Image (cartoon, rainbow, N blue to C red; front, side, top):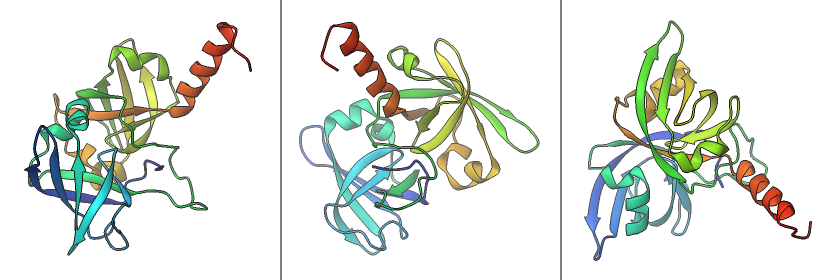
Length: 203
């Protein structure tokens, strides 16, 4: 479980095919590797990956073909910056919201509107995720916990403060770039519970 508060801006240092359509990804992140061990979880642009090895501030993780196809990790290349966050510890502050690191879909950056102190950024929203996104609700974009400023049938927008623009990959994203999206897990649980009741299931 994560919080959507990026700890470090890391960098992809290697992507090695490991047979089939899977890959071994190497990521530089001195902070997140400072206490990392084999089997730990680290979110890379919002995708929960399991640490295979740690060496000199670089960790490696196996990425299955399904993950490469269903997230924006498939387009990462050596030199690409990535948002990094270690799994939350029990008792730690929840600065963002509950994030699983399980990407629900891939969106696309549609527009950027700079203002004096912040920037409004609009993203394309996959149709199957639209029902989970509400104004003032939470959404995770490339691992960053954000508050939805406005939402339409196939888009949503967020306001990015200077800290987010400077310390995460969202500050350098261009129009047309893909982003990993994870909707609020609480919305999915509510939908499931209400569906069960409507269908006559036991409460």
